[in-house]
Amino acid sequence: MKTVRQYKLQDWLPITVKDAKLRDWSTMDVVLFTGDAYVDHPSFGAAVIGRIIEREGFKIAIVPQPNWKDDLRDFKKFGEPKYFFGVTAGNMDSMVNHYTANKRIRSNDAYTPGNKAGFRPDYATITYSNILKKLYPDTPIILGGIEASLRRLSHYDYWEDSLKPSILIDSKADLLIYGMAEQPIMDILKLLKKGVPFSSLHNIKQTAFMASENEVAKIRNKNEYIDLHSHDKCLKDKKAFASNFKHIERESNKIKAKTLIQYCNGKAVVILPPYPTMTEKQIDASFDLPYTYQPHPKYKGRGDIPAYEMIKFSVNLHRGCFGGCAFCTISAHQGKFVASRSQDSILNEVDKLTKHPDFKGYLSDLGGPSANMYQMKGKNIEECVNCNRPSCIFPNICNNLDINHDKLRQVYEKVNSKPEIKKAFVGSGIRYDLLVDDSLSKEDRISAKKYIELLAKKHVSGRLKVAPEHTSDKVLKIMRKPSFSLFYKFKKEFESSSKKMGLNQEVIPYFISSHPGSSIEDMADLALRTKKLGFRLEQVQDLTPTPMTVAAVIFYSGLHPYSLKPVFIEKNPKEKLKQKKFFFWYKKENMSYIKSSLIKIGKKEWIKEFY
Picture: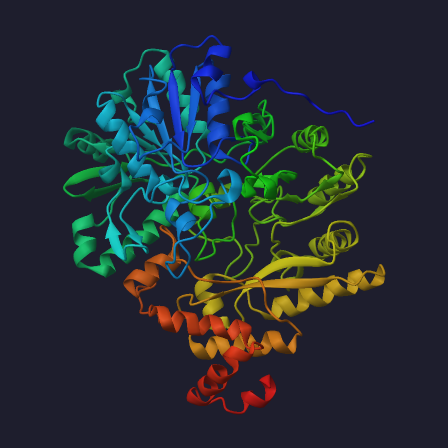
């Protein structure tokens, strides 16, 4: 008979005054505000940081989705904390959460019970922080999460179509932690516990703050630093803005990074270098905290939280991604160096999930940002120290990168051996270039073949999703993605492995329209190539230029940040929608447009191939 773990209300972190009283807490050391509902799961940032603060011996309360429109009682209910307020917009940038790529407001919110919209404001980090500063002007505020992290310096905001200064300016916050916050928050807590004044916390790695001129002078005397073009200069000169990005991206992903200094509205914003990539012991410590793996009981009866339902029975094996895709924020937030959990930590989490009351024997994902990067890193770390490449696998796979899949297969096989597990799917996207690239050594090729066979045999149910993103080599180069020729190769190998096992399985590709460099002709080519492969595309999206990505910098400036050469961009909303129509060439309502477009671009002969 299945064992189900039972929890009491006090097993969750407090989100109400009643919860706090169950722990005999009348005042708090830290109060954390988040734009998401509180789900006590390691995939939700507020839960992770809250649990770490708890582990370090502090009294912590979380205020999920506070009402910013009423008398602000949610902002007052726990009063003034002893040390600081934490503020995050949640697991997503609030503007990506609210609006489609076409800037239409979404009617739902996957991080809210019942999938209901309207429970967080636009630019949630700024809104929450400003309210707290008005109510408690003397209490420090620390920003964190992806919205703050990717807006820590001058950034292009797609939704207002404007260049904005560091979020520290508009939020009036005292400190910003960028990236994954476990290491900096622990050092901050230890110093505060010793009695170090908050105002003295301007030496913590992986943080950003407004610096005095004396502090800037000391940094310039002692540290290696880069002076970025000021926000004022970036407003006047798009080339200056674009040229900043190369330094920002490189220093975010270096083992030995430099301090960045940028003046925004006449004030100096300082970005200190990141911490080293978490060790196995450190990342295990974060995942092994006493999570309940469930939403707070307060939400009972209010409907499912879709973001939680999606990851309820998934297991994250690692963090970070060395792909460096131009449209993606993962390496900007989690870093390009992969931090992998130990097998024991992963298997312990699997055991916990089997005791969840809703568990039926199926894991929805054994994955990560890219599912098959587990335990992959530089063979000789000294070579990585001086490396400036934003991607370890584009334009070619680095010969110093260990891309062997044996350790990942071992994890799959150990999970499969557990009697409680009927099937463990791989739901995250995989990087197929790591499996079929021509540069693979004989040993890695054998390992990759075994991985594909195991994937096909035990970890897919009919369809495997991968993300070529485009078919045009010209566009793929800007995207920092491999040639589409590798997709053909991987598709053939995966489907051949499936067939040998008597399984009828297919590869489902993801694509993006309107990416910088992509023209109507490129989209027509994409549509025709995928038609010839027998696809009627489903997994598609129009580009949303999110802050701190190569794609957003190009979209705003028209220049590639590394070469500073012009790149074609489709900005017209109507033309962007036309690009997307090519994904759905088979729909009757699009046929007339497709035909006229093909004639216009001189590809009349393609009409017969389509229809």
